[in-house]
Amino acid sequence: MTLDIKKPGAVRPQNPLFALLPWASGYQAAAWRGLSLFKFMASGLPSFLVAVPLNVALVEWAHWNKSLVYALLMVLQVSVNFFICRRWVFGRRDRRSLGRDFRDFFTGIMLFRCGDWLLYTLLVFLVAPHGTPQGAPHYYYLAVQCGNVLVFGVLKFLFSERLFQRSAAADAAAAQGGD
Image (cartoon, rainbow, N blue to C red; front, side, top):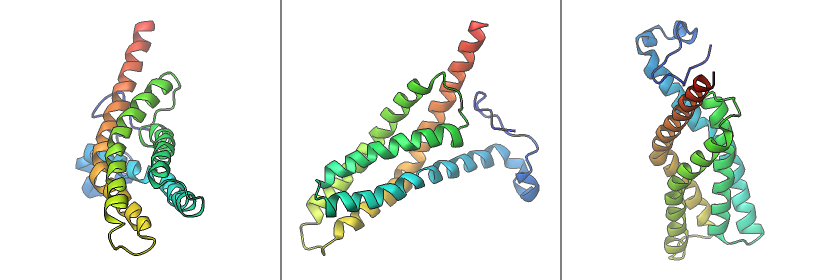
């Protein structure tokens, strides 16, 4: 059984997970939302694990501009995260609204990530030149990513949850109108 995001607030009845956590059975909706938040946060891990070594390789070995590399890697991360979030976190498997969902997700998440990029750029170019040890930008990149997870993670989750619920509801309405 899967979470029906077409109905906001819908919960999974009698899920075996709650047999293991009987204290949580009264809080199914909150628990499923928490599980969705956890899955959302975990869905960023694959692109993060690719972005860190790519950042080091392109900046340190290929000598590309730090801000350019970070911006390109953000685009890669958001694109990969869209497909993971759409299918795994929010359970959307149809192709009807794929293009619209990608456009809306990409635009919204990139607004959050622009703040992240600005913070990274400020840290690297304003702070790093003033007496920090060689290789410090790697630490700034990691600090910005951790801050991104803590500060922007919940906001990005709420935005994404609303976007995919709205999209599912619109698709359901269109399907009913077409019948």
